[in-house]
Image 1 (tube, rainbow, N blue to C red):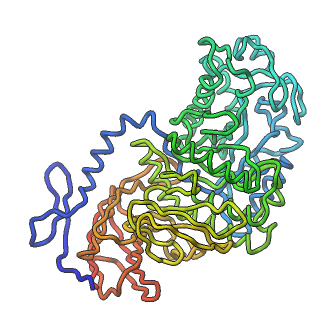
Image 2: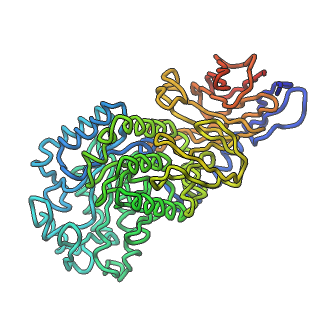
Image 3: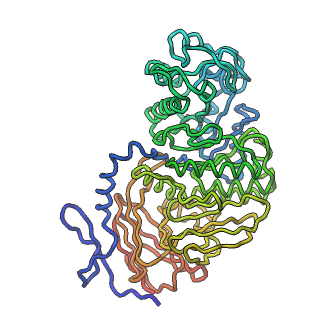
Length: 568
């Protein structure tokens, strides 16, 4: 039995640094103090300009999307269908066609008779609105009331278009593409965006249009390859959006099988590879796209759950899509392949609705962890998705979680755990050695998910759907610890729905039963320590409870710096 021998406390040492020392001993305990981490962060900030941006906390959630009916009634019905079933929705994408012409930014009031009222309806439900666009304006349109965009002649006359204003066919008609290398054209474009970027609208689904305007494009700065031109488009959209609303985003393609790399690494707060089928082939192709994006260094690639077009997902395919999506940056569910049939969990049955609710709730609980990991990627480079295996279709989500996608009807899979560290099965609690071969049959409601021994996971828990906690934890910063000797982690905790955060150093030494916290600001904390032997006493906590059945210790505390002693 592990016993507490020494308690410890924080000693303030010169220049505001903090060091943890054992009482009656002169040997410092690891890890380095919180303020040393802060200094380290300040040194890497200069490098962050070319790293992935920080993704707003809200954007890690569940995004609903329909591209079949394209009316305000359909969008409201879609979102309300989820909310009525206790499935959270963070944002809704209003896809094309929503304007009178591509891209004039005038609402088509036949489809959306009261766009402000619709946006306010979603705002009341704390659902953000994202609008679809491309960078092209048409002389001949598809699915819109106007063939010719009202600003088309102005764009051509003022030299705001690429290719000297020569129109070209693209997938939404025929038109010209704005030359985003031209500063005057970009500023003009921003004024067009201002017409619809109102309170409640948080950004854009920035779709590809430039792809269709030639392998080489004439611009204000000379002839560029299509791939060289693309970043100007996405940069313009990103800079406009975060300039108007720091919590705003663009959803843009990082890598896509349809044409390679699109937006620059530093301009994609949320990646969407785009346009997959809903069958196993589509899921496998999307996994490859996401993994390529992550290996390139895109910080937050998300998943298009159920695909977008052609093949519709079966019950099994839809569930496995959702489970994989829950282990990416964002679950984006919608498309033209059955927006009100195959894309709706309850269409497949109440059992699938329950599974989908579980996936979405688990994903929301992980948001502080996902956010903290992407902040690390912003400061130092890298991606939320790590250690991806194309062969086994597996990856780490940050440093502490590991998953393997199930991509066939055969629920029996074989895969290897990462070679670094020991791993707990998230559902059973079974412990595995590093690099273990796992051969398992997973029922539809389960999927391969593992937590690294020593993990320190910041979570947001508001109810008991996943079983990780309950409603009493709502409004508290939950931190789940999987003990493994003496471990620590610097957490970047979101302070709201946007990109702001505060740092918090959490460490646990199971050898002496010591939980240490040094935070930038006071918070109410709940700590959940897993795989714990029986606990007889906890000191310096506001409250604690040991669950012998789960081998789990809950500790409540409040403040910015404390040292909790656990006695077994």
